[in-house]
Length: 96
Image (tube, rainbow, N blue to C red; front, side, top):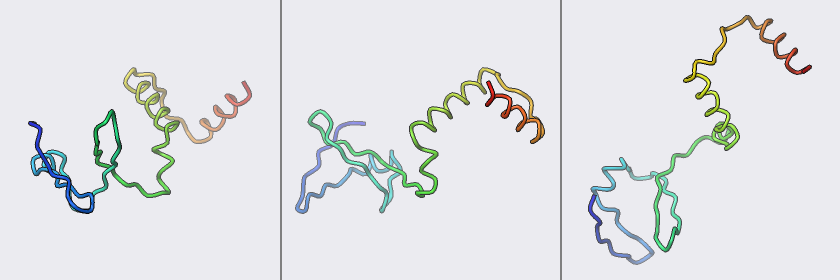
């Protein structure tokens, strides 16, 4: 995508070129993060999530999700057990 020239307007407004809008599938009302990076203005499309689901996107949870994905891809899985067997295994693990 070739660089485009935009003009800084009154009230600090700029128009994002249509080609970029379409490439990022942006729509009116979408959230954008803006930051200064090495002397450049960077806009990043953002997705808002409900506050009660924010725990899933925490750094620690995502790290653990990645670890589980690696176990799945490597085939390091065990067969499902009954609830009682699972709870007994967890109890045994907590005693170690």
